[in-house]
Length: 99
Image (cartoon, rainbow, N blue to C red; front, side, top):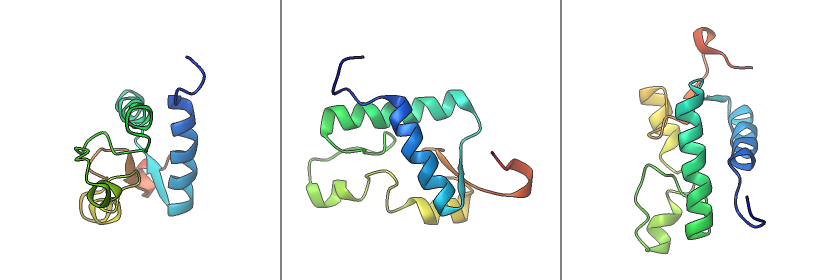
């Protein structure tokens, strides 16, 4: 990877820290998790921000601010659905507790 290119591993590091701090866990399905992390890294390189790869960047700065990961919707989605829209962050429970 060239210098200046966002690495999936870097995105994994900060999303893991966020999940731990917020009381969530990352998707235990490594393949799915990696797809989302790669999408965030690509959006960082393309758009300059860690936009959610499952939502559309519109070019409207105020609207797009809402979809910077972790997006403004993720807490409600995790509460109601058990995971965020991208399936990156999951509610922690006894049955699927990740290290």
